[in-house]
Image (cartoon, rainbow, N blue to C red; front, top):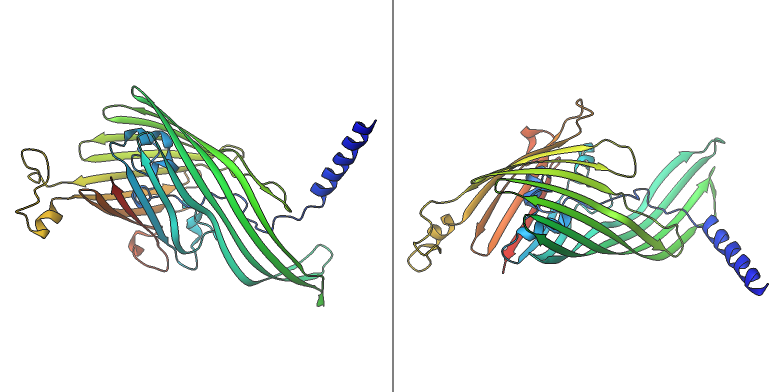
Length: 365
């Protein structure tokens, strides 16, 4: 009887707590941060069948098996303050600041570790006025500081020409929220709260590698949960992407199709290319770059130059313009630099008021 009474009291308390939990004050509950890596961004996000640098932790962990060295990738992005509507195609949201680091990752052929922010909001005294169904005018002033960080451990297994990758992700968040509001010009009881959330998520990647053709599959944010003390449990949207990559000497062509799994929504296409320019006589007979007798300019020219381009769009809505991307990269010995620029208008590339920029520093060791 005691056990039955205890169980009943616990059930009543749990239902009461859930029923009266405050709604989560951030509307954009589903987010994935930003697409990672200037190289992939310049290729229109068509990277699931490649994923052959440290940013592969994000795109497809199975691609890490292609690495012949250890990689470090640090990515930084610049967004216009007034974000164009097309940024929804490439995932930037108001939950990430306009200028900040968006990825730091270290990877090898056996796996990797990475950090990236999913949310970083600091809004002060934002104002909203609305009218409810009874015709009452509601005015709200809110302060929000919200951060959510993702820490990822990648594991990779290679069997012949087939690679399987797994990401285990720990989510750590904090939220400080304060609100004062009026109902028909009459001040109401203010509300303030500080909370901390923890959670987990997982990604799965699959890659078939051929001499010239790769086929990749990535499913992200499986079984994700974020637990808060004072708010309902959240989950991230689960995305799936299927990609192909065709490698032709110094030219790579790639294409992906991406969509959400849990809800019926439009899917996106990603198309991109990468062209590598390399000096034919840059290597000695031993196969290593000259060091002693070359000038600095000669050494710079002996590195590898890359030119990239791509497009992202929705095939279901041909009236909506796609997002075009271009970029370049340079790699010399153990160091590289990549840059990408995205815009829906090709003639406005470089316009800081309407373009998205991403910069990545790459190192091998």
